[in-house]
Image 1 (cartoon, rainbow, N blue to C red):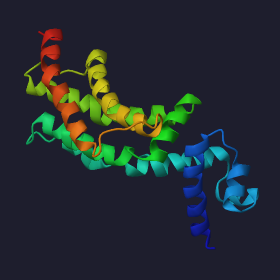
Image 2 (image 1 turned 90 degrees about the vertical axis):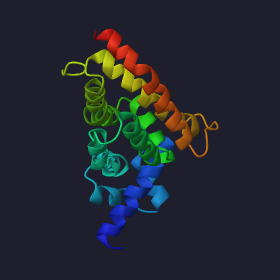
Image 3 (image 1 turned 90 degrees about the horizontal axis):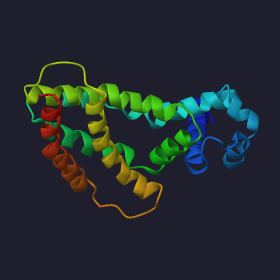
Image 4 (image 1 turned 120 degrees about the vertical axis):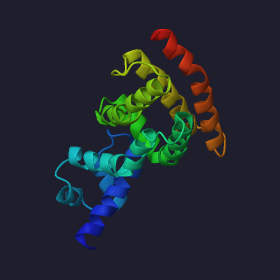
Length: 201
């Protein structure tokens, strides 16, 4: 097998393995699943930590779309429509067994991967969305407050919780989920303007 094909095989198997076992899963067990020696894995990845980093890049950062950031800033569309489009696209990425289970298990085991990913959500989606809403409401321009960010985290968490219900709790969620996402965003946008005006008279 060519070097790059073997590396791809190991990476894809590692994604499935860690989704099932968490990052505490042993690479020796991964090697058995692949039918290769333990040494083969370490010829392609210097350490277990290096393999985990590649899994993070493969599952999370490689799927991030830069056009999402542009969408949030596109004032030719109402902010509500921008958020609906973003979250409908977003669930197409995160409503996946491996994505959700690795994300949750790595957080429980104190790996930094969820924090790194949530920093991306905060800096590229939530803070820009707060600024856009303040602009729409003719409120003074300034950096988002923690309270404002928390409101948008509530929206984000509401959308992501549907994925947790499906892939962690194994309970039913709306199918297709896009309608529920749209209603969640509309309900959020129906209430948040009055809260921001109240906190920033």
